[in-house]
Amino acid sequence: MRRRFAAVLLFSTLLTAPAAAQDANRSKPVAIPLPETTAPKDVPYPGGTIKLDVDATDTVQRIFRVKETIPVAASGKLTLAMPAWLPGNHAPRGQIEKLTGLIFTANGKVLPWIRDPLDVFSFTIDVPSGVKNVVAEFQFLSATAGNQGRVVVTDKMLNLQWEAVSLYPVGYYTRQIPVQATVTYPDGWQAATALRGKKTGSTIAYDTIDYEALVDSPVFAGQYFKAVDLGQNVTLNMVADNPGELIYTPDQMAKHKKLVDESLALFGAMHFDHYDFLLAITDEMGSIGLEHHRSSENGVDTGYFPKWNDGVGERNLLPHEFTHSWDGKFRRGETLWTPDFKTPMQDNLLWVYEGQTQFWGYVLGARSGLYSKQETLDAYAHIAARLDTTRGREWRAMEDTTHDPIMSARRPKGWSSWQRSEDYYNEGLMIWLEADAIIRQQTRGAKGLDDFAKAFFGIKPGDWGQVTYNRQEVIDTLNGIAPYDWAGFFKTRVDMPTREVTKNGLTMGGYRLVYGDTPGAQTKQAEKALKGVDQGFGVGLLVKNDGDVAGVIWNSAAFKAGLTVGTKVLAVNGREFSGDAFKEALTLAKDPKRPVELIVRQDKNFRTIKLDYSGGLRYPRLEKTGAGDGSLDKLLVPRT
Image 1 (cartoon, rainbow, N blue to C red):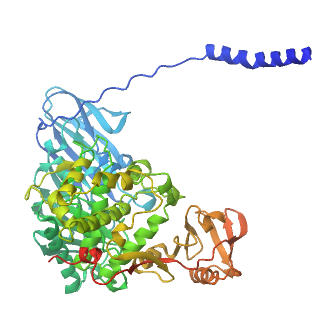
Image 2: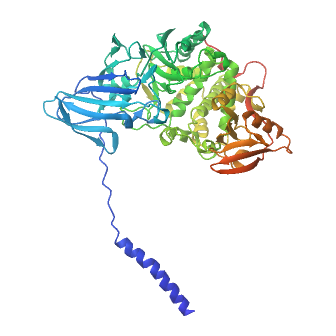
Image 3: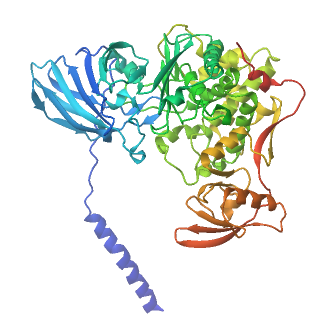
């Protein structure tokens, strides 16, 4: 017994003694304090106007070539930066890796530069005494394939974004830095932008404008181009892969004109002197939907006009981006507005910025006729049902999803229903839909969210600037329309996890969410885009027609059977897999004696699995619950 105790004691000593000795002999570095940053100054840039020259003629290798002349007022350190934090992206999305060949010169001599290791978008040089101008020359290597990023140049069109082809002097509000930009385009191409300028041949010298506004004024240019006056100083500028995509009917264009009229009637004020829709109809240039104050970048697939009657397509894009001129550009959350493109944005209020824009995008789509009323109701049903499959709401509040643009940079997710994504768009829509119903109920139909839009976004007519806000201002404005516990309303729906998305806007509006075996217009569109079957609402599986699993809902029957993204379904009930065969199997599975049996491959492994599910096909739709028009019907009625 004593010998055993001694052995245990010796073993314990052997364990502890080396650890103590190791700790005593271990070097312990001390962190070097990070340098303090200096806030930018809201004073005019002392050097004067920057001259920016861009050669955008290379449509083969797709390289933008840049020469930028930066006037300087004094010698010494000068830091120039490529924009990092990009408005509308809600994250640091600048493509610094594509800026190449950077050379600074002054009076013909090369100036060495150093990149800031704590901010790789910034370059510092020493300006010699007596130098009046520093010249920066570089290239922006735009993507030549989709795996390099969004394609912005093809042989027929291009999208020039100024943040990709310019540097700005650090230390000043970007609205205080004047820039005069000149661009040379391919011969015969036409260009559209919110900027105005003078054209000489294939070169356009744009009017001098501040750098903040320049970055907010991108260009679409193309070989096949058409511009249409929509009235109210709003123009629809279109580029396309071929001229046939630019042929539209009078009725189609009338709906776009009505979108403008309905939007101005809604907000009651204009915050732009002119507005340019930039619309690319293309299968070659990368898709985009990005807001700006006096313009928007919009990319849709070919068939926008020719296949108008085939479904709703992407017609929600223009109403959404146009709304942003008021919500997001003129008015922006106080932590979302930043003085330059180095200062990080705080995205907490995106449920107003994007959520209410998503709300108005669908409403204006319906009021203008770009969407029919039934198509809009189908969209609401699909949105509500999809949000109910987002099991991640059990642990993650909706407001926390506003940080997703920074956290995940919109990369694909394997378990999106559990991780959650940027739900502030559509869940924001559902919250604002309920807010409209509450206002109508509280005021006995006298007021609605239209009144909030005028009171909040329609202030200061003719003001082309920005007015920031915080959550309390949103609450106070709502209380001015219809007194209610709006603080508590947002606390439970925005700040706290919930088991399911609020549907009070639907039920109070005279509808309820139900399920059947026939897809509505929005779900048909989703399945068309998926090129497969969307049964996330039932068995919990989204699968392409070739058998590739595109999504599995957390804790669904498909999840419990062990399916995951990356799995391929080879056969269903003994037959080669197809979308139709899968639908048929789910329908037959209503009989518990006929379960769905799948043969699947994951990596090099094959399995046969059975789905414990007998719910059949399950597609969402809205069902009317009362006679006459409810508040939801009234919300969608045109105002002009």
